[in-house]
Figure 1 (cartoon, rainbow, N blue to C red):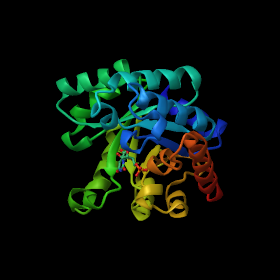
Figure 2: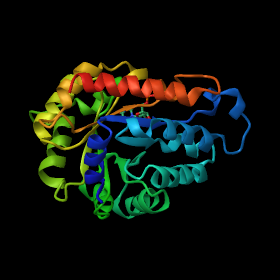
Figure 3: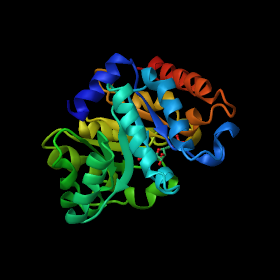
Amino acid sequence: MTFTDQLAAAWQDNDSLLCVGLDPDPAKFPAHLKGRDDAIFEFCTAIVDATADLACSFKPQIAYFAARRAEDQLEALIAHIHEKHPGIPVILDAKRGDIGSTAEQYAVEAFERFRADAVTVNPYMGRDSVEPYLAFPDKGVILLCRTSNAGGSDLQFLDVGGEKLYQRVARLAAEQWNTSGQIGLVVGATFPAEIARVRQIVGDMPLLVPGIGAQGGDVEATVNAGKTAKTTGLMINSSRAILYAGQDENYAAAARRAAQETRDAINRYR
Ligand SMILES: O=C(O)c1cc(=O)[nH]c(=O)n1[C@@H]1O[C@H](COP(=O)(O)O)[C@@H](O)[C@H]1O
């Protein structure tokens, strides 16, 4: 099954546009996990198992694993998701971007080593830097377009001949690069007007929308700006607000409550 088909099924089956972000920071773990060699895996699998029926996707952020020499735990975590929750696609958030020959290695890393269903990619180096990911026909490739951080405007808002750079990225992706229907775009929830503009440009293309929860993005404005005619089309990511909703050994139950509230809040505006 392709990433796009899997995502469409998860939207439907779980009645959810919520992407649960997996950004494990051991400094924020409950006391009983501290010091354990497998703490990152244990923390994340408990969150995954507690929220899988409420999510349309999981998004592990690779830096949180690599910084702790825990890539083996990332591999094990993604294997666990595939085995226990096979309907939920995994987006590896790696934001890679390099010349084609190096991008080939990043694509192998994301799709063969980590077995992700999709990967985030920085499109700054252009079409040939994105093509090696597209060579995996059943995988998703999610390009940064209008990021959620304030500094994203430094470059993404530059005028490039009558339109802004993020609009050009959306147009290139939709009109020239997406010949196989594998591409999605990242548009931050902190910029709903830009979500609406991107939606106009790209039709029904899936949008990964981080920035609700800890970054303060508005759920109602995000859904109204980004939903498609089928009231799907969005993977609205929340990481810290779900992962660290509880601080003690009941953290997974607290994460479930936070995920449920977020899923339901999103659904109110669909
Ligand atoms: O590609 C991303 O996922 C991403 C793009 C972006 O523009 N902004 C953004 O916050 N992210 C990621 O989304 C997650 C947001 O986490 P929270 O702010 O804790 O919900 C982090 O993993 C970020 O790296």
